[in-house]
Image 1 (cartoon, rainbow, N blue to C red):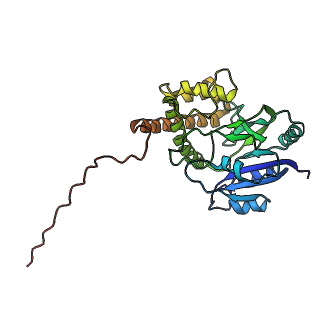
Image 2 (cartoon, rainbow, N blue to C red):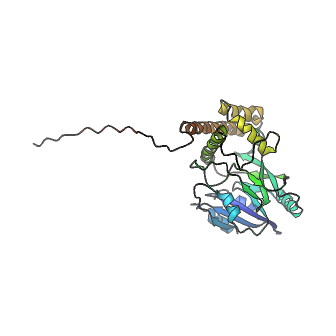
Image 3 (cartoon, rainbow, N blue to C red):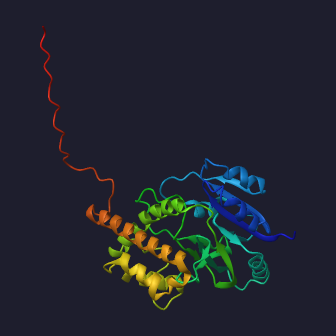
Length: 311
């Protein structure tokens, strides 16, 4: 098999269910790094069985997170890096397009479009497609933005919603990347519980004009990411966001066309928005600080004393 001169970066933690399909889909890459966070399952064993180089990442609790740390420290032997999550797949057609794009590069990076599958169904509507992500770029020219969410614990050690800031022109590839998570709904809920911690801090920062320096700015007339940032600054100030998110996804953006899976996905997104709102309220209540120790904690009443009389 002819190898394509691309270095693949796969961040992982306890991903034994997804790794085999993911690694099979990137076999055409010249080299593959799996950056692991001390997995307790068979992730490392599986990665090594596919010939990937496994590197352990130890998160310091703040910054950098896993992808930026990897971009700074891994000894890539190729100019181009492709970042693939464990629940994503690179199709043969996309590999052909990648090979062509980097052979005659007019850009420093390329956006890839994702097809998100939920309960075995492609969620084509509801605003989930197209879903552009900057994943292929010259690794020396791109780093993920820091949205200043480090104060919030339990958000994970990996960049999820942060975007790459690239020094150079960007293009778009036509073929889709597939997003297929082989884990169950329990893991979806667990993951989005962490994500809602992160989102609540982002909402808080937007409401208070914090943490925008060094990030992709908000611009109604900019690219897709900048437009989303502009709309999000309006969104965080709207009332009834859980209901609005369901109506936006399921009705206005035609999520109902994706059947039962679309309905369930819309309901879960509404629940996710509610979780963000509750956690945002908590942040607001404590001035942006969590785990606050009360200044005066009431003491529990002393237990009644039992007197034993000697006979």
